Image 1: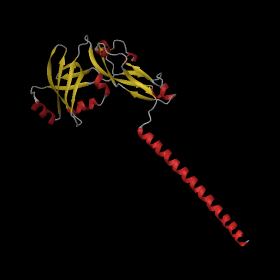
Image 2: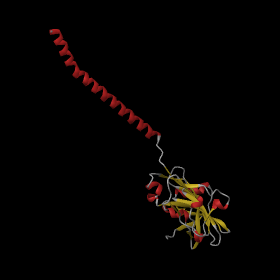
Image 3: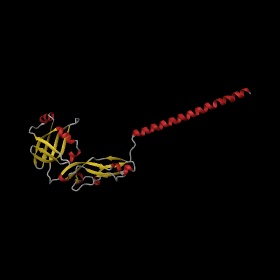
Image 4: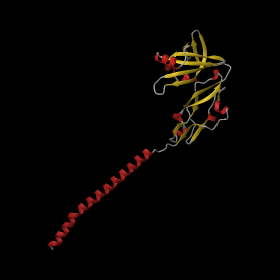
Length: 241
Protein backbone atom coordinates (compact mmCIF):
# COMPACT_ATOMS: atom_id res chain seq x y z
CA UNK A 1 0.00 0.00 0.00
CA UNK A 2 1.50 3.30 -1.09
CA UNK A 3 1.81 6.09 1.46
CA UNK A 4 0.74 9.61 0.63
CA UNK A 5 2.94 12.29 2.17
CA UNK A 6 1.89 15.91 1.88
CA UNK A 7 4.39 18.70 2.46
CA UNK A 8 2.91 21.93 3.79
CA UNK A 9 4.00 25.19 5.42
CA UNK A 10 2.32 27.24 8.11
CA UNK A 11 0.82 30.52 6.94
CA UNK A 12 -0.08 33.53 9.00
CA UNK A 13 -1.64 35.80 6.37
CA UNK A 14 -5.32 35.00 5.95
CA UNK A 15 -8.23 36.44 4.02
CA UNK A 16 -9.32 36.49 0.39
CA UNK A 17 -6.56 38.84 -0.70
CA UNK A 18 -3.85 36.70 0.85
CA UNK A 19 -5.32 33.55 -0.69
CA UNK A 20 -5.42 35.14 -4.15
CA UNK A 21 -1.75 36.11 -3.84
CA UNK A 22 -0.85 32.57 -2.86
CA UNK A 23 -2.71 31.11 -5.83
CA UNK A 24 -0.97 33.51 -8.22
CA UNK A 25 2.33 32.15 -6.88
CA UNK A 26 1.32 28.56 -7.56
CA UNK A 27 0.35 27.84 -3.96
CA UNK A 28 -2.78 26.21 -2.55
CA UNK A 29 -4.21 27.53 0.75
CA UNK A 30 -5.67 25.00 3.15
CA UNK A 31 -6.59 24.20 6.72
CA UNK A 32 -6.06 21.25 9.05
CA UNK A 33 -8.28 20.71 12.09
CA UNK A 34 -9.61 18.06 14.46
CA UNK A 35 -8.30 15.67 17.13
CA UNK A 36 -9.07 18.24 19.85
CA UNK A 37 -6.39 20.60 18.55
CA UNK A 38 -6.56 24.12 17.20
CA UNK A 39 -7.06 24.56 13.49
CA UNK A 40 -3.93 25.52 11.54
CA UNK A 41 -3.79 27.55 8.34
CA UNK A 42 -1.40 25.91 5.91
CA UNK A 43 -0.25 26.18 2.30
CA UNK A 44 0.78 23.59 -0.31
CA UNK A 45 2.40 23.50 -3.71
CA UNK A 46 -0.65 23.51 -5.99
CA UNK A 47 0.81 21.25 -8.69
CA UNK A 48 1.87 18.62 -6.17
CA UNK A 49 -1.66 18.41 -4.78
CA UNK A 50 -3.15 18.27 -8.29
CA UNK A 51 -0.87 15.31 -9.04
CA UNK A 52 -2.09 13.48 -5.92
CA UNK A 53 -5.73 14.18 -6.76
CA UNK A 54 -5.38 12.10 -9.92
CA UNK A 55 -5.10 8.98 -7.74
CA UNK A 56 -8.38 7.51 -6.53
CA UNK A 57 -6.84 6.23 -3.29
CA UNK A 58 -5.94 9.77 -2.23
CA UNK A 59 -9.58 10.51 -1.43
CA UNK A 60 -10.10 7.60 0.96
CA UNK A 61 -6.70 6.95 2.51
CA UNK A 62 -5.05 8.07 5.73
CA UNK A 63 -2.47 10.65 4.64
CA UNK A 64 0.75 11.81 6.28
CA UNK A 65 0.95 15.59 6.62
CA UNK A 66 4.41 17.02 7.19
CA UNK A 67 4.76 20.61 8.42
CA UNK A 68 8.36 21.49 9.13
CA UNK A 69 9.75 18.74 11.35
CA UNK A 70 6.38 17.52 12.60
CA UNK A 71 4.13 14.92 11.02
CA UNK A 72 0.51 14.04 11.66
CA UNK A 73 -2.06 11.66 10.24
CA UNK A 74 -4.95 13.26 8.35
CA UNK A 75 -7.72 12.51 5.86
CA UNK A 76 -9.07 14.64 3.04
CA UNK A 77 -12.40 16.19 4.07
CA UNK A 78 -13.15 18.82 1.45
CA UNK A 79 -11.94 20.40 -1.77
CA UNK A 80 -13.02 23.68 -3.28
CA UNK A 81 -12.46 23.41 -7.03
CA UNK A 82 -12.46 26.21 -9.57
CA UNK A 83 -15.83 26.25 -11.40
CA UNK A 84 -14.31 25.85 -14.87
CA UNK A 85 -10.50 25.74 -14.62
CA UNK A 86 -8.53 22.62 -13.80
CA UNK A 87 -7.41 23.89 -10.41
CA UNK A 88 -8.20 23.73 -6.70
CA UNK A 89 -8.90 26.84 -4.64
CA UNK A 90 -8.80 25.41 -1.11
CA UNK A 91 -8.24 22.11 0.67
CA UNK A 92 -9.50 20.91 4.07
CA UNK A 93 -7.77 18.16 6.03
CA UNK A 94 -8.92 16.51 9.24
CA UNK A 95 -6.54 15.13 11.84
CA UNK A 96 -7.35 11.63 12.97
CA UNK A 97 -7.29 9.95 16.35
CA UNK A 98 -6.44 6.27 16.04
CA UNK A 99 -8.98 5.46 18.76
CA UNK A 100 -11.87 7.48 17.34
CA UNK A 101 -14.08 6.43 14.45
CA UNK A 102 -14.23 8.69 11.43
CA UNK A 103 -16.77 9.19 8.68
CA UNK A 104 -15.52 8.96 5.10
CA UNK A 105 -16.82 8.45 1.59
CA UNK A 106 -15.24 5.55 -0.27
CA UNK A 107 -15.73 4.53 -3.92
CA UNK A 108 -17.60 1.42 -5.02
CA UNK A 109 -15.80 -0.90 -7.44
CA UNK A 110 -18.14 -3.08 -9.50
CA UNK A 111 -16.28 -6.30 -10.30
CA UNK A 112 -17.03 -9.30 -12.56
CA UNK A 113 -19.34 -7.27 -14.78
CA UNK A 114 -18.16 -9.18 -17.86
CA UNK A 115 -19.35 -12.48 -16.33
CA UNK A 116 -22.58 -11.10 -14.86
CA UNK A 117 -25.37 -13.64 -15.47
CA UNK A 118 -27.88 -11.00 -16.50
CA UNK A 119 -25.45 -9.62 -19.08
CA UNK A 120 -23.77 -12.75 -20.39
CA UNK A 121 -26.83 -15.01 -20.58
CA UNK A 122 -29.71 -12.58 -21.07
CA UNK A 123 -28.13 -9.64 -22.90
CA UNK A 124 -28.89 -7.14 -20.14
CA UNK A 125 -27.10 -3.90 -19.42
CA UNK A 126 -25.76 -2.66 -16.08
CA UNK A 127 -26.86 0.66 -14.58
CA UNK A 128 -24.73 2.08 -11.76
CA UNK A 129 -26.99 3.98 -9.40
CA UNK A 130 -24.36 4.83 -6.79
CA UNK A 131 -20.61 5.39 -7.18
CA UNK A 132 -19.58 5.83 -3.54
CA UNK A 133 -20.89 5.24 -0.05
CA UNK A 134 -20.32 6.99 3.28
CA UNK A 135 -18.90 4.70 5.94
CA UNK A 136 -17.91 4.84 9.61
CA UNK A 137 -14.83 3.05 10.94
CA UNK A 138 -11.60 3.38 12.88
CA UNK A 139 -8.69 4.81 10.88
CA UNK A 140 -6.93 1.43 10.84
CA UNK A 141 -9.95 -0.17 9.15
CA UNK A 142 -10.45 2.49 6.47
CA UNK A 143 -10.74 0.74 3.08
CA UNK A 144 -9.53 2.28 -0.15
CA UNK A 145 -12.75 1.09 -1.84
CA UNK A 146 -15.53 -1.48 -1.50
CA UNK A 147 -16.01 -4.28 -4.05
CA UNK A 148 -19.47 -5.06 -5.41
CA UNK A 149 -19.52 -8.52 -7.04
CA UNK A 150 -21.80 -8.52 -10.10
CA UNK A 151 -21.23 -12.14 -11.20
CA UNK A 152 -24.49 -13.58 -9.79
CA UNK A 153 -26.82 -10.69 -10.59
CA UNK A 154 -29.55 -11.77 -13.01
CA UNK A 155 -31.68 -9.83 -15.46
CA UNK A 156 -34.09 -7.35 -13.85
CA UNK A 157 -32.31 -7.72 -10.50
CA UNK A 158 -31.01 -4.94 -8.27
CA UNK A 159 -28.37 -4.85 -5.54
CA UNK A 160 -29.14 -2.66 -2.55
CA UNK A 161 -27.19 -1.08 0.30
CA UNK A 162 -27.87 -4.10 2.49
CA UNK A 163 -26.20 -6.33 -0.12
CA UNK A 164 -22.78 -4.69 0.26
CA UNK A 165 -20.36 -7.13 1.89
CA UNK A 166 -18.62 -4.96 4.47
CA UNK A 167 -15.19 -5.80 5.90
CA UNK A 168 -15.00 -6.20 9.65
CA UNK A 169 -15.18 -2.90 11.49
CA UNK A 170 -16.96 -1.04 8.66
CA UNK A 171 -20.50 0.35 8.95
CA UNK A 172 -22.60 2.36 6.51
CA UNK A 173 -23.30 5.83 7.89
CA UNK A 174 -26.86 6.19 6.61
CA UNK A 175 -27.90 2.83 8.04
CA UNK A 176 -26.62 3.87 11.47
CA UNK A 177 -28.99 6.83 11.31
CA UNK A 178 -32.20 5.16 10.17
CA UNK A 179 -31.51 5.20 6.44
CA UNK A 180 -33.19 2.89 3.92
CA UNK A 181 -31.20 -0.32 3.55
CA UNK A 182 -33.12 -1.07 0.34
CA UNK A 183 -31.60 1.91 -1.47
CA UNK A 184 -30.47 0.59 -4.89
CA UNK A 185 -26.83 0.77 -5.87
CA UNK A 186 -26.75 -1.11 -9.20
CA UNK A 187 -29.20 -2.95 -11.47
CA UNK A 188 -29.24 -5.19 -14.53
CA UNK A 189 -32.07 -4.64 -16.98
CA UNK A 190 -33.18 -5.27 -20.54
CA UNK A 191 -31.87 -2.57 -22.91
CA UNK A 192 -34.45 0.05 -23.77
CA UNK A 193 -34.92 0.93 -27.44
CA UNK A 194 -34.30 4.63 -27.80
CA UNK A 195 -36.56 6.97 -29.74
CA UNK A 196 -33.76 7.42 -32.28
CA UNK A 197 -33.51 3.65 -32.78
CA UNK A 198 -37.27 3.36 -33.18
CA UNK A 199 -37.27 6.17 -35.75
CA UNK A 200 -34.41 4.52 -37.65
CA UNK A 201 -36.23 1.18 -37.69
CA UNK A 202 -39.44 2.85 -38.89
CA UNK A 203 -37.56 4.66 -41.66
CA UNK A 204 -35.87 1.42 -42.71
CA UNK A 205 -39.20 -0.41 -42.80
CA UNK A 206 -40.76 2.40 -44.83
CA UNK A 207 -37.85 2.33 -47.26
CA UNK A 208 -38.21 -1.43 -47.70
CA UNK A 209 -41.94 -0.92 -48.35
CA UNK A 210 -41.21 1.65 -51.05
CA UNK A 211 -38.68 -0.68 -52.70
CA UNK A 212 -41.21 -3.55 -52.67
CA UNK A 213 -43.92 -1.33 -54.19
CA UNK A 214 -41.57 -0.05 -56.87
CA UNK A 215 -40.51 -3.60 -57.68
CA UNK A 216 -44.11 -4.73 -58.05
CA UNK A 217 -44.99 -1.79 -60.25
CA UNK A 218 -41.95 -2.43 -62.43
CA UNK A 219 -42.91 -6.08 -62.82
CA UNK A 220 -46.45 -5.16 -63.78
CA UNK A 221 -45.20 -2.61 -66.27
CA UNK A 222 -42.91 -5.20 -67.82
CA UNK A 223 -45.85 -7.61 -68.14
CA UNK A 224 -47.97 -5.03 -69.89
CA UNK A 225 -45.13 -4.27 -72.27
CA UNK A 226 -44.80 -7.97 -73.16
CA UNK A 227 -48.52 -8.35 -73.80
CA UNK A 228 -48.86 -5.35 -76.11
CA UNK A 229 -47.17 -6.81 -79.28
CA UNK A 230 -49.27 -9.96 -79.12
CA UNK A 231 -52.40 -7.89 -78.83
CA UNK A 232 -51.31 -5.77 -81.82
CA UNK A 233 -50.63 -8.91 -83.91
CA UNK A 234 -54.07 -10.28 -83.16
CA UNK A 235 -55.71 -7.04 -84.12
CA UNK A 236 -53.65 -7.00 -87.37
CA UNK A 237 -54.71 -10.54 -88.28
CA UNK A 238 -58.36 -9.69 -87.66
CA UNK A 239 -58.00 -6.69 -89.95
CA UNK A 240 -56.53 -8.78 -92.76
CA UNK A 241 -59.33 -11.29 -92.47
